[in-house]
Amino acid sequence: MKIHQRFSMILVLILLVASLSGCNGGAETSKKSNVEVKQVSIGGAGTSGTFYIMAAGFSDVINKELGINSVAEVTGGSVENVKLIGDKKIEMGVTQLDVAQNALAGVNQFDEPVELTAVLPMYPNVVQIVTLKDSPINSFSDLKGKKVSVGSPGSGILATNEVILNTLGLSMDDIQPEYLSFGETTDAFRDGSIDAAIVNTAAPAPWIVDLETTHPVKFIPLTSEEIGKFTEKYPYYVEAVIDKDAYKSLDNDVPTFAVWITLVSQANLPEDTVYDVTKAIFEGEDILKDVHVVAKYITLDNVKNISGVPFHPGAAKYYKEHGIEVPTE
Image (cartoon, rainbow, N blue to C red; front, side, top):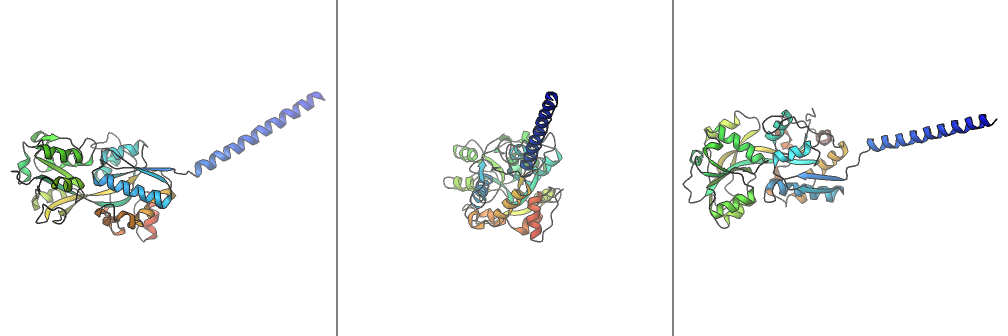
């Protein structure tokens, strides 16, 4: 009898443990299937650049409209943002379209492919070749032998400048490159330690506007032939102009080309979260219009300008609701 009672007690304990284990397992599954994103970090660039300004604007929208804690991160720019996304250190980032395509393919600045998805179009980043008003530099070829700011390490600007130099018959060996951020470039112009800068950024660029307050500048135009070497060979480059109204130093539009900037994200972020972020940004124009003039480019019509990068399913869901089909693979 005692043996029978002991066996019954053991059996009850086994069943109880199994039941508790099943409950715990169910709780874990439920928890994993309902992931709650508590923070969205957005990689920008240096604080004086448009990348960071827009990233901060997005974070403000996400905080106010969705109640999700969001912060803009100071980074080196496009390349670093993509690498941080690949390392799961930030959820989203601002990057050039060509850099995003390189990341997916694992080429140029990337040793292996980086998994990422597009969220929304931002604006065309305009190539601007800047020097001071009294400089003898008047054409791209005049940069040879000069001290030129080419962008900080990890930036899309530096990556693009390598392409620009090589495409137009120069290389880093033909100039004296200075690897400077926007703020450092402004200071370098003022203390006379650089002769020019090649940047691709929104116009007007805050750091150039700041430089104009003490030093009149001029912009070196590119010829139709020079522009064609980019737009005909690379699908992500488009013809553009620096509008004469962008800077007080300009009397005429300056012909150049541009590369589209896009907001990208980790591919495995929850669909609902990315949908909500996409919706909030597109519908948060009252906040973004005062952040920077380039916010005017964040339109549904410009979604078509983001190609060669799959869209996140959450973003695709929002676009589908507005009659726009985008690739997710």
